[in-house]
Each structure stands twice: as C-alpha cells, then as structure tokens.
Image (cartoon, rainbow, N blue to C red; front, side):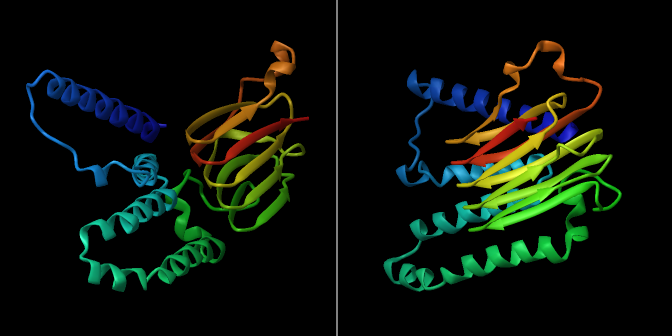
Length: 234
C-alpha cells in the first residue's frame, strides 16, 4: 500500500502549496495570473492520470494524461495547424483499441502495472470493456483481485462462490460506465477510489454489525469518472 500513501502525500502537498500560493496572491504578496485556457475540464483526466500513476496503475494513468494532453494541444496551435491536427482524431480510437487488445492478448506484459501477482491465473480477473459489457462468475478459493477497465461500458462480476486471498486488491478505471460486484455478505470490502462525478455504493449497513469478517479484506482502488461501483451482498 506504499503507492497509496505516496499518492495521499502528493495530493496533500499540492493542496497545501496551492492554497498557500493563492492566499499570498489575495494579500498582494504574489502577483500572477493563470491563463484561462489552463483552467478547464481537461484538468480532470490529467489529475486522474497523475493519481493513477502515483498508485502504479500505469494503464489508467497513461490514458488519463494522454487524453488531457491531446485536448490541450490545440490551444497552442495556429488556426492552420489546428486544421491539420483535427484530422488526426481517428488515431485516438486506434490508440484505445490497441490498449484494449494489449490487455486481452498480452495480460502478462501488464502484470507490473497493477497489483503484484506471481501470474494472472484463475485467482485474478482482467476485464477491459469499451462500448461493451461483460459478466463473469468466479469459483476460485483464493481470489487475489485484478484489473477492470470500463470506458462507456460495464462489468458484472459474481464472487459469491469465491473465497478471498490475503491482500486482495482490485484496481478499476471507469469512465462513463459501471462495475457491479456480487460478493458474500461477510466479505470485508474497502474503497480507495478517486471519484469525479461518480461514486461507489456498498449497502453493508442493512446487515448486523458482526456480519463482516475482518480477517481478510478486498480493497477496490482506482478512478471513477461519471460512473460507479456497486457492491451487492448476498
């Protein structure tokens, strides 16, 4: 969990430094103006990407930073250069497709980009959905976690017949999509997510306090943008 602590410290320092700088400007101790074109929705994927990279989730991080840069570039081009640049937009679709295929056909090449496993076997899950959906039921007796990426798509994962391994971590990247996880009611599930216009839901409160077993924990980490993660307990 060291990468999660690093991300927390990084953002804490960013907020403290940013607050201090703007406070000094308000009292006339600093004189600067931020270009309007820098402050826009394009900061959202940049923040998501940096946060993911700090957590060593390189797939989500590279996508977030790349999307931000792609949409920032036109602001620094001449009108003639913009016309030529906009002709390259199909490359964005090619890049997304290539990223999805790389995870489907070369999952082992990505094993250092998420949680650390000996290998990707029946104890882990690796799902990528773009404008599509998927469903899967797992029966493993040592579920370690894995990676789920949904861009304008969704995944339904049934873990009711599975058992948790120690230090299970499920990394998610959700953009205008959703993930539904059906788990045994006694599982201890914790969220470590960066939600932006999205969120996560776990209706554990409808069960008695002693229902959850705390000896093993499933940590769900990652980024949720205009989407959601729902825990369904059975």
